[in-house]
Image 1 (cartoon, rainbow, N blue to C red):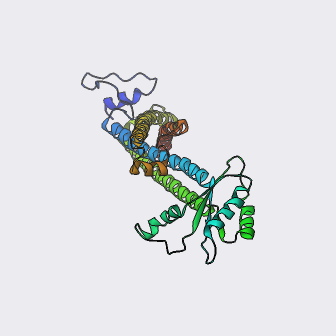
Image 2 (cartoon, rainbow, N blue to C red):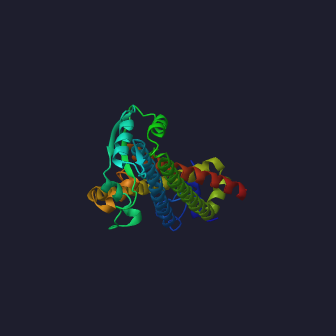
Image 3 (cartoon, one colour):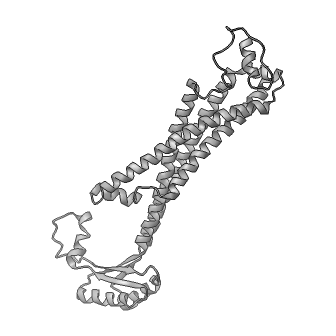
Length: 324
């Protein structure tokens, strides 16, 4: 064991280092796991990238979850009544009769009757533009606005329509609500899976870096054991260094993610009232994180730093037991 290695080992204890010559004295003492080395900077870069991706996944999941709540609220505030065109009946009279039943139902705020042209326009996405539908028994639509504070009894409304207006069918959009809910849960589940994979990849990277640091400083660790340093002391030093690396990388990645969402929100506001902007707003809402979203990303960044330090400690303790 060289005197340089002994000096580096003793620098971690309260003992005085051995006297060394000028040629053995390093320019400055290096810690067991230096934070400014090439390996340390590599760990910071990996943690920053992983934290950025994890924050993006978490932020996207929050945006979709919040947007799905708005979707369901919007859909649940409306219902529709379809009035079929039957042979020998005046469809305009049938529509007015069905609208009276709907308007008399408690909890209904408004019942708007679609004209024949508006009802035919609803079929354009499926049948195409420019078709002459005058000879077809096109059904008429009644859009029902519901009172959010006093929900209407849609089951009773269905019964009333079935009894007094069997030519009318109520659609409470329950199927759409279920589909929107399933889609939102799927997106959130995929984001959670991506988040878990990113965390696992980051754990592998931190574990590899910790093992490399222990292997590089194996002789120094052995000297520390000789002079009486405990495994707890050595592991704590590694944990402190990797905690600093993890905190630096996590703050860089989390800050970059917050900047990304701020920039995305800015462009989304610029694209408002455009086809692309409307589609993005329909999917993700305002595409901007609220205070809760910012708090989640900051908490995620701090958790990454804490887990980095904790993971390094666990791995170091395991490696030290293997070296004994």
